[in-house]
Amino acid sequence: DAGITQSPRHKVTETGTPVTLRCHQTENHRYMYWYRQDPGHGLRLIHYSYGVKDTDKGEVSDGYSVSRSKTEDFLLTLESATSSQTSVYFCAIRTGGYNEQFFGPGTRLTVL
Amino acid sequence: GENVEQHPSTLSVQEGDSAVIKCTYSDSASNYFPWYKQELGKRPQLIIDIRSNVGEKKDQRIAVTLNKTAKHFSLHITETQPEDSAVYFCAPSGGGSYIPTFGRGTSLIVHP
Image 1 (cartoon, each protein chain N blue to C red):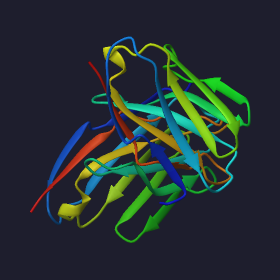
Image 2: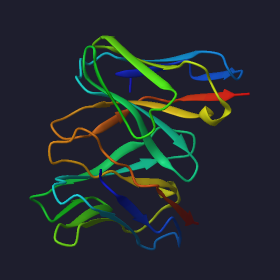
Image 3: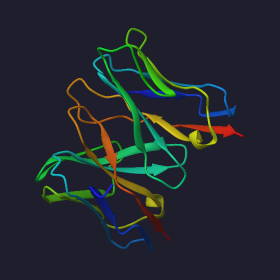
Image 4: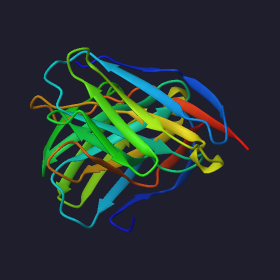
């Protein structure tokens, strides 16, 4: 489990403020993903990356941006947080030849 | 994109009973069929998966079966125990896509 970390683990912020979540991996995997998890919706993909500076949108990308300047770090930014972005955010890495997902511990974000 | 449905959304069983969760998908090109388990407050974790060239796979008390013709796969848990209580997600993918699509989850409750 030490192969992927997320920071912060918990955050409370106010509507309209920018927020950046960080995902860090130590295993040099090419593919990284950001999901949000809300009751009744399962895990929904926000953005994913297939290499340094290579990213693409997922199902629920509106209001989010990402950056990947190094293999090990994948950042998720909420430019102007809204209450609808209150959620648990999971980062994941693709660990094998298929789309196996290994998840980070998650970040609980509350937007007041 | 892939349409994924899981049934049932909630499953309540007595300890020692069997449990079956079904996942249907739409993309006939899918070739990877995993199941994830998420305990309360924790990250999802891969528990078993199957490739499209295999019809069934077992690992102790859990098994996954695949029906590619009908486009569904199922998770089977035998001799359920209270520690099997969790939310289970399917996430089929493949056909050149690097994006798994998660089902909405099945909450399994095992009563002692």
